[in-house]
Image 1 (tube, helix red, strand yellow):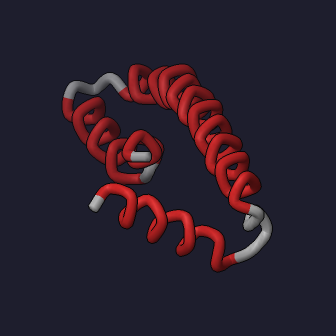
Image 2 (cartoon, helix red, strand yellow):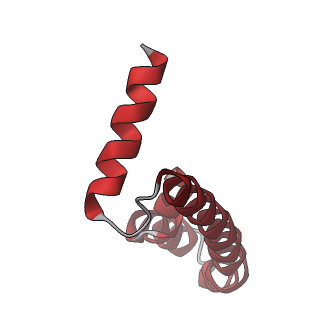
Length: 82
């Protein structure tokens, strides 16, 4: 999920630099405290739902606890698409 990239170091660094140039480090602090935690929580919920859905699909195939299960599921879906 690409939203995880919003929580990485790069957006924090850019925001810090912009806020420092404007002499408003407090905005950086509040955005990191409130905004980034809201993004983190949202992405966490979406990721858990996606993982639960994927595990349910893999358990239907009988391969929920195998490392090969992911490869089998991807190959099966690719074959169905072709």
